[in-house]
Image (tube, rainbow, N blue to C red; front, side, top):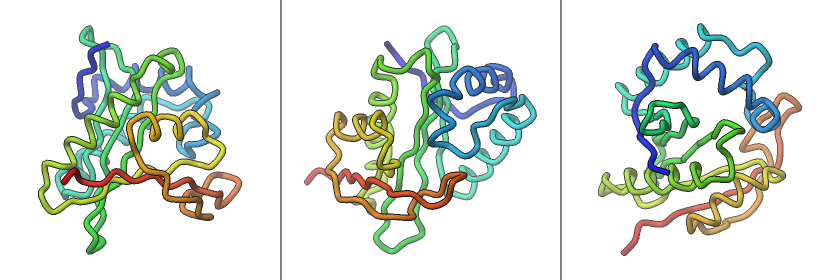
Length: 171
């Protein structure tokens, strides 16, 4: 499946809210923002925040779309102000599209995008230890498992064990 990557537009709000609400079974355990009744207004608010983060150089959040314009999910790079100059990748895929390589394609796209900054040497994926699907994506894409650390991700239930994966810039 060919994926188109682009910033969200307000016209995506209905499809975004629908995708979130239809995917609560796979999103809600891992993403604190996913909740029943997620609205178009919340989607538009998120879109505005992503545009601001992009303008400030703090993140690059992208919608994942089919060639026909159907929203598949989202993925983004989050840039660190840390002197090690790494960035992290986050992603979600609507439930009906999971298991088709969408997340893996998005991760590889974003890793390549991250390497366009010559000073960047590490791209990180953090996943809740029990989130087997996200951890499989990291491994499938070639990330190195670094270890488990408590508290890097906080869910509604509190801090959890977090699996850390790294991509290193090819030499």
